[in-house]
Image (cartoon, rainbow, N blue to C red; front, side, top):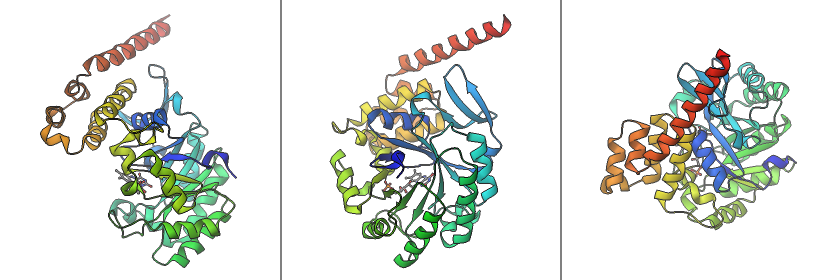
Length: 335
Ligand code: FNR
């Protein structure tokens, strides 16, 4: 059994949110593993790997776009999730990232049109041969463990057939979101169907997913993991609205979560759109009636977001730190 995925509380993959600052914040609070947002294979294949000395990170970038930024604190704990419908491209990614990440996961659950139309995400769930091709190629090329994340199928027997085939491909764990392809929140999470997967697949840890609507306190995480009978559990929406859900000491006030998130966003130079997105999700309804929320809505830069929460000193401190390191590096090059 892979230790890496056994008895773990995990930050689930989330596009736009599962980037460096939120991953680091969840790790700081107590998450054991953190997934990146889904990155489509082509984006990573076209990116350039750069060691960013000013930040101490490994960056995969395309021009000004940071496709993936890995901080030293997440070494051994960050799982790259990819979107793909090609074994060849998946293998290429495994070669590119080597062991920069702790594992590689394939998204087989995304029901959004952009994923399905390209034959990725949930479109794979009915193409067992394709899944086997992708996972086999990825496993052969990867230096790190390979996993995938699925949804349950419309017919529970088909889910069990599929997971038996996935198990044979040599994945070290399997994430199961207990909703069908056409189900959304508030449809209930079919945890009994996840339990059946656990009974069927005994050689690898199963990671249950889909319980955010039920999780209010830290203790609920284990309660729902036990209900699903799995070794591990991954949390998406609740970790986005309340990252401190991973704190065994209890959740924090949302403004404290925002402050802690902004500290990481400034330290790791996160872009404006992604920073604003996460802060808005944490702030929720306060955007309409709290003066800080109104200032956030009007903000057009990370500095303005920080100002909305009286954190411009934090922004300036990290900006100056980067400048100092960059000029030191330039001085070394000139020598
Ligand atoms: C998601 N989800 C998702 N899933 C995935 O495999 N890759 C991804 O990149 C994303 N992106 C994403 C973005 C956002 C904003 C949300 C809310 C969700 C789905 C997510 O990982 C999870 O499967 C579901 O949200 C159900 O889990 P929760 O929210 O009940 O914990």
